[in-house]
Amino acid sequence: MKEWKQTADKKEVRVKQHNLQRKQGSLVQSHQFLNQLILCPQCQSKSFFKDGFRYTNMGGIQRFLCRDCGFRFSNNPYKQCQTKRIHQLCVLEAKKLDSQTEIKTVAGKENQTLNGKIVDFAWQLKKRGLAETTIKQRVYRLRQLVKKGAELTNPETISSILATSNWSESNKRVYIVTYKSFVQTFKLEWKPPKTRVEQKIPFIPTETEIDQLIAGCGRKLAIFLQVLKDTAARTSEATKIKWLDIDKNRNTISINNPIKGSRARIVKVHSKTIAMISLLRQKNEYLFNPNPHSTRQNYYKQRKRLAVELQNPRIRAIKLHTFRHWKATKEYHKTKDILHVTRLLGHKNIKNTII
Image (cartoon, rainbow, N blue to C red):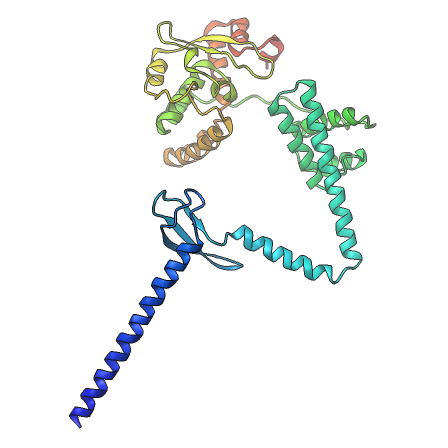
């Protein structure tokens, strides 16, 4: 009896070993098969690790990590799965053509014509010599009107949206200016509605609050804010400052890329600002990232964090343009000379300086 049990146990062990060897062999074969089929899209290497799954509504997608270049990729990308699914749905819908599908195709053609109108409008503004930022803002506002249900070729729909929207009067005026330029481009007739914009006094923080904000930000952003504090430059002007514009001997910074038709100018700054700028590494011709959008996003995040840490809600009211208002107010109280403030801000007309 004991001998029979021993032989049975030996058979079970042999069966388990055999199954384990088969699994290991199949895993090796499958890995070799994957190596033959899959290549790293970055360096075309066949050497990679399996790096987990990405779970989507189309199922799990195997991810891989290249051993040579460290690039992470998948054999069957999500976009490819999505296009396959859309293709299948389109085939099924094509078999059941009805009036609804015809309406969809007509709507698609209308969207194409609208996009064509907007692109043509942007090109006309480009030929007139308008700035890139102005063109982008006007195109964005036209698309916002379309999202609200407006027909750009029907001015009455624009008037009704402006009358029923919850936008502020100043925001409505910007949309009116945008659509007026669209109407002039395509020679349409439109009587714009009247708006009454009341001028508001800008928020001016204390110097202590500005210094706390600068001290609490990261090093590079803190230097950027210190430059805004001393030069009263706009965000887009400060991001375009080059290393050649810094004069360390005279403690001056030149604003050579003004926007909104302003004048180029040379501004005297504090020696502390020059010392902070010297801490930056010279990677290219610009001091900071020349893209103002990324700088704004970084500033908003750090400002929100500092407002909570300092328990001061006034910090959240400090915009990047507030530094310009603060410097202009301080210089006027110091000198009582409005022409000096006008030159500092780069305004060509003194009316832009007077609130």
